[in-house]
Length: 265
Image 1: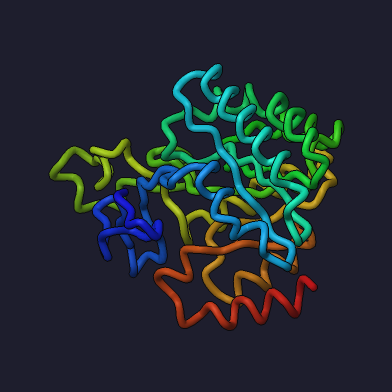
Image 2 (image 1 turned 90 degrees about the vertical axis):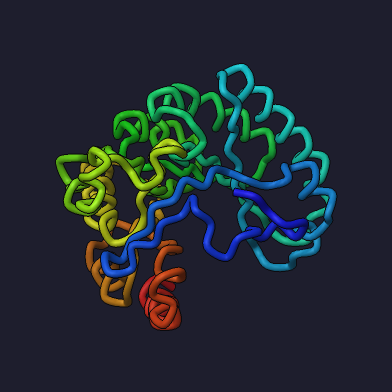
């Protein structure tokens, strides 16, 4: 997706994002577009923030060695800038963006090494995964306390979780093109929104049943205050994030936030 100098999209309706308004979902093929960490650190904006916040990082190199080098450079830069920050900060290790061109399995194999490397910063670490991540790996991470929080989930890669998501029904009008994703030319994209809600609940319940005890942040299809109440009633999540609702149900944002503050604080 092409960006302006202020890092905002050039197009009001980028063709790499499809909003499914009636379904309460969105399909996007937006990778981690941006100017890169050196530029963002150099702006000095993060350093001036006075309230606690999170910086998310995901290596996008094609090979494991390329991603390892990206990680090394980012940690070195972060470590150098860290003393200039005015607010408490946490780093999020993102291993789940489906649009960066990596398979979940190859990212799983790097996760422990990544988390161990980020401990050099001496700040809290969040791990962001999707529902495809192996629960036994997350249990090992929990046992060894390699991070402080696990966030589940990012967007669901197009065509996965077919036992729970009826892709042909969602995109029924694509039958004339062979049931392919509307974003096929971009690799298929990832689905976010209402369809993800039960999938993420299922994954987090599975994680708790496996004995994972660290805080888990729910991130997958919170579209209303009712969804927030459901999460609170489950008594297995420590908080939640949402984004799709802000795009396609903006009138619900205030109620979602107020309900979240009331129930999770």
